[in-house]
Image (cartoon, rainbow, N blue to C red; front, side, top):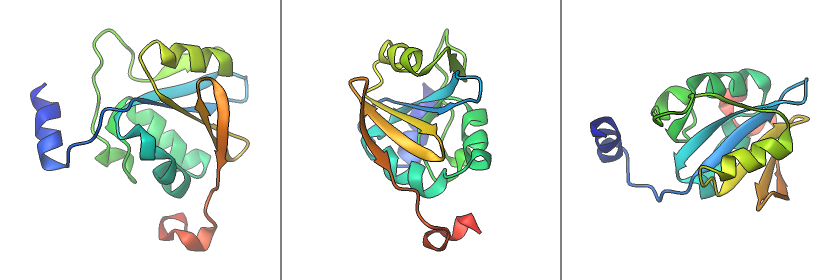
Amino acid sequence: MKGLTTWLHNKHMYMSIRTAIGRLEPDGTVSYIFCKFNGEEDHDTLSEYYFDSRCIDKLLAHGDIISLEPRPEDCGILDLAGFDRIHTAADVEAFLAGSCRVDAEHHYLFQNDCWIQFRNEVVARKLRIPEQGDNPERS
């Protein structure tokens, strides 16, 4: 708990809105992580900074996170006792159901080069991926 308290003190206080962030894999499974704070605003960060497989690989490899930041190494590690840090679901339906068991309120799935946001297991919207000129990190 000391690590989380220090991290929150050094950053800023976020509202605890849990998010599940995943990617549909070629075999139909979903690789995903949990994000503890600020889930309601994650869509902007995801669409701006996590726009291709290379970026998403780095995020997922980081494991469960405290808050989504533009760089995975700045996200803070979330250690949920009894849980693996990187999760796999059999399919999209299992991803939505499994992440609901840990109270994820927002679900984001990267599929076909697009982020899809789910609410209550229904597609809420597709998120626009900025053009290359919109974000200097993309060059």
